[in-house]
Every structure is written in structure tokens, then in C-alpha cells.
Amino acid sequence: MWSWVLHRITGVAIFFFLLVHVLDTALIRLSPEAYDAVIGTYKNPIMGFGEVALVAAIVYHAFNGLRIIAVDLWPWATRHQRQLWWTVLGLWVITVGGFAARHIPIVLSNIGGGH
Image (cartoon, rainbow, N blue to C red; front, side):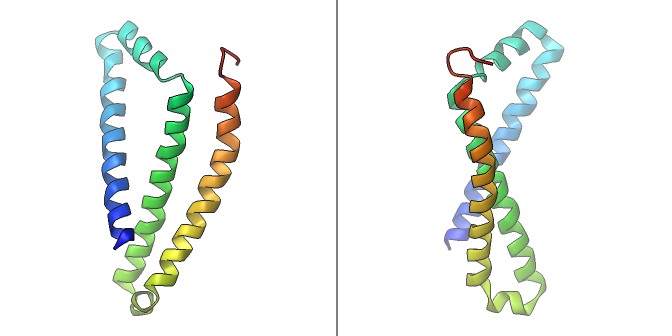
């Protein structure tokens, strides 16, 4: 059940990110100054940590989606759903951990106007 709940939550979160991304990118056609202003608001540590959350959501949704496909296609996967879910979680931890280990120091190095 938790894999289902997390899959739906991450799917909705990714949808809203894409909606905001399309809308803020569309600003460039209306007003390049407005676009620059909006993009400028994204350059802060909170949004940097938000990027980690976004990558975490995308990675979970992708790996769990592959698990769902396997369960739908192969009877052996149905019998091993629990092990497959733990595999998804393990891959998620490794992938997001690697990304976060690289990304968070960059985010923190930009605090105070550093480049």
C-alpha cells in the first residue's frame, strides 16, 4: 500500500513541477524581464534543496514504475513484490544519496553570493 501511496504522491508532485516549469518558461515569450525575475527567485538554498526533493520524487516514481511494469507482465514478479519494493528503495537510496552528496555542497557553496 505504501508503494502505491508514494507512487501517487510523487506523480502529482512531478505533474505540478512540470506545470510550473512550463508556465515560468512561457514567460520568456511575454516578457524576458519577468522571466529573468522569476528565474532569479529560484536561485536560493531552499530551491536547491527543493531540487534534491524533485530528483528524489522522479527517481522513486521511475524505479517504482519499473516495478509495477514487472508485476503486471511477469508472474514471478507478483510473487516477489515485497523484495522488488525493497530493491526499489535500495536503488532509490543509492541514486538520491549520490545526487545529494554532489548537489548539496554546491547549493551550500552559493550561500552568501559565492559562485
